[in-house]
Image (cartoon, rainbow, N blue to C red; front, side, top):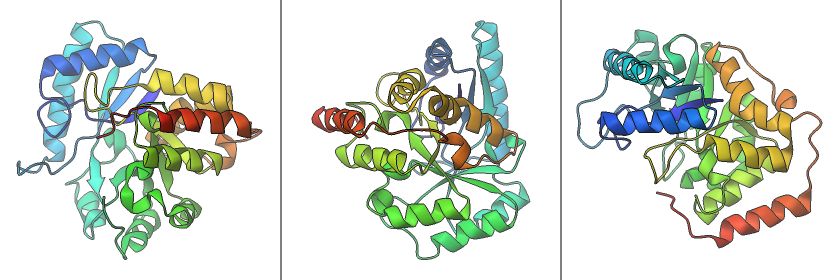
Length: 272
């Protein structure tokens, strides 16, 4: 599996704070079957100096060396979680901000949390028109988008990939609003990729293996493989995958997924 949204780089944002934690996260992810993670730190966090692409590359290189020395079968690629703002395209074109994997034309864009910008659609369209492939991070966890299915459908029609967080699909890991939205997006076949957005070793950990098994049981082996491996691999190569290929021949057992959603909504959550 390939996890394209992680906060495995230590000490740069609200993710891990120590290198030892990063190595433990790498071991845990590899044990679940993850072979590749993209480090996607926030570029601006809590008054710290903004991260540069050069700093991210250097930190990822150091981390990979330590992971390799421990014999963990996992590779970390550089990337970043880019805020949706008017100068996004210019910063990418100048090389100040980087693509996922730092080798193609795919960007992970974080939507504004509380309210969708009136110019948000236009900004994303400008990226698409300039030849970038856009992955929108965790729309199901974003209050501004949770109850705006028509907007999310419109973005998908434009060519934007929606990345749902693994924890939003697993009972007990997300808020009721995030769980509802995640399964609504799954049922409408709007999800293009699943990633962990892992921040810690316990709270918001990498749970790709558990999510992949849940998706397999609910939607079938093909969908699970595409959302956790096929689509992320293609994106890192700069290739597009049609959602019809992700969700082909998928039948919905309505009673099953509704039972699962009820279980998700009943449990205590650790969403943060």
